[in-house]
Length: 187
Image (tube, rainbow, N blue to C red; front, top):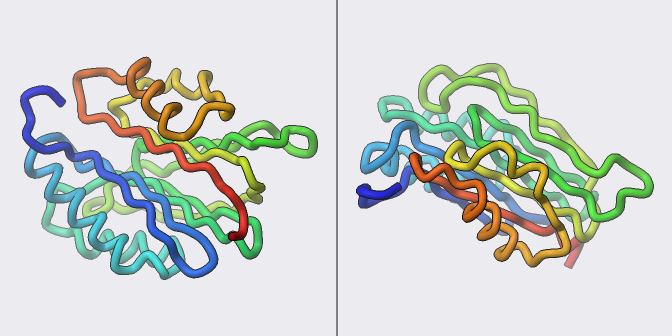
């Protein structure tokens, strides 16, 4: 956000056994305090990312008590099973656009729970969805208008798609982050 030295919106993409952990974190508010909370969350995700998503969320919650707190969404890809486990607390939107629409719906939307990681953490259930090569995951913080979900073109390279979403739908009044990850399958 203009006028701020640090952003409270951060991300993590980490290789884990048999797949990857992808997360977007939004520290409450903006500026240095939000950035501190986000950095604490990302450090915790980095350290414990090998654990199941619900365990990682609980670890983040415990690490963030006494801070401003964060909202976050995370996804764990399991390339050996062709599955993705995802969950979210707060308003980091998540969308999975499938590359092959012939046998399943074109997209899945992450259902997040209201709350604050490090504050009022709600009961959360992780959802498990099948993934196939070419499927594209998009996470966006609340600095991005919701209308971006209608404009997903998986024919674009992930970085270009993220840049386009941010340029077209960024609010300009808050920190904003868009992460686009394309699932490539077992490598």
